[in-house]
Length: 342
Ligand SMILES: Nc1ncnc2c1ncn2[C@@H]1O[C@H](COP(=O)(O)OP(=O)(O)OP(=O)(O)O)[C@@H](O)[C@H]1O
Image (cartoon, rainbow, N blue to C red; front, side, top):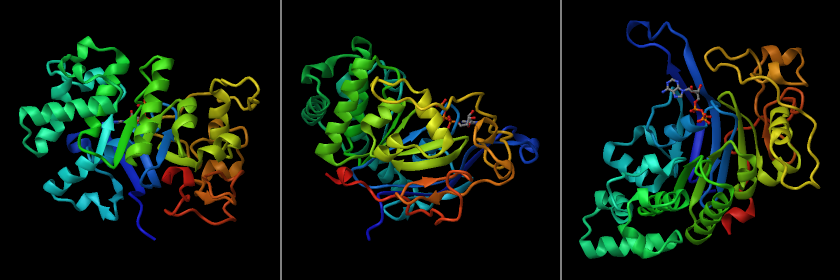
């Protein structure tokens, strides 16, 4: 079997809370703990969870903007930690990011055309005619008129700026795009347009997405699979279809129960999510969700639940709902649903 496009193995990131000679004795922020998943070509893996659960840190680790405390990130089977600078540049070319706030990530002094072609100019010299042709092509790809290439970001709407950010990400023909809260700042109607654009681009160009969001409605709309994170760890990873039809982890259940239900015919689950997410500097012992969990038993307070593979292929970390008598989940995780390969 060929290796997945991306394989993340036991990824862990602890941030120091002090510097200098206090660094080693001070407590650490446990932002990401022992996270493993795969992403196949052409699929969308969503990462969801409340604020502070480690979603953006995973994005930064994948881009090697920060180094992991432990664990590995493999692209087509190659560990990115061992890459030399020029190899890392090539890797970054294949993996692009789209950010939540396109305005702050776009240079306000450059025109749309300059913004879009800047990444490509870093890799190959383009003359004026080639730059214009590339900018026009990419603007059309993201549903904008080629004439927009002369506009500044300040002369565009929020939705147009996000399309511009996507065009810039497409310029280097990436195989994977990490979209970090890419539609959270947009109006609902514009959100839908941008999500549909991303899904169209995926179908046309076979791009894989890691879609980071706290919005379950968005995740259900775009995702093939979804990883639910709580305080740095994955607690459930399943196909979107399976997860929304029947969440298994009590935290997933509570998140879905707390999300607005657009379809009044759909039954809202009766598990409220109470209390705050605990501090990642001093997380609760055992299962970090136990202080908020209505199902918690003694074992949850002392033992971190392992990820267990359930009969339908999803993986869940819960002593009550997924007791570790079944197979422990390793990095193979779930098969890609057939829709991802279409
Ligand atoms: N550079 C850093 N130094 C110290 N702590 C950090 C750093 N970056 C993030 N953290 C902490 O790590 C934890 C995870 O942060 P992260 O931004 O990855 O979460 P998130 O799920 O993306 O949250 P949000 O949705 O609010 O962006 C948080 O407690 C955050 O305060």
